[in-house]
Length: 183
Image (tube, rainbow, N blue to C red; front, side, top):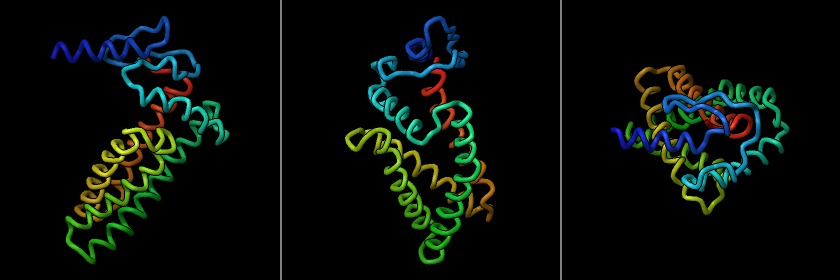
């Protein structure tokens, strides 16, 4: 346990802005500034390569100010997650469940949900990055959990709220990388 705590503290120190305090248990507040790829530790090279891509994407979308980024993030977390749940759980999973077994419906709707996200992740990390294929595996696991939850509750509210929190966390990380730096 102690070794894992020391590794975590080392990672947090590597990401903190100059002068920011890191107590190992939470991210410290940092002044608003852009995080450059050169400032990301060598321990996460795929993330370092993505930082400039993240900056370019948000600038290209016209959301290169914190207020615009927060507005777009709010839309995605609230609205887009609901639309994805409606499509992937109600329509795709529901249609498959009527035609196949529950397990097959969960599997194939989750694989489709994952494939959709491979395209999105590739836009940030590139097709040659292992993260383009690894991160969507977690999306598939989430999709399977949300399909199971939808099946057992008969409601999209649980999957939607959970999806909302996942999206909010992802956008928070993007905000940290783009406007505050990690640390």
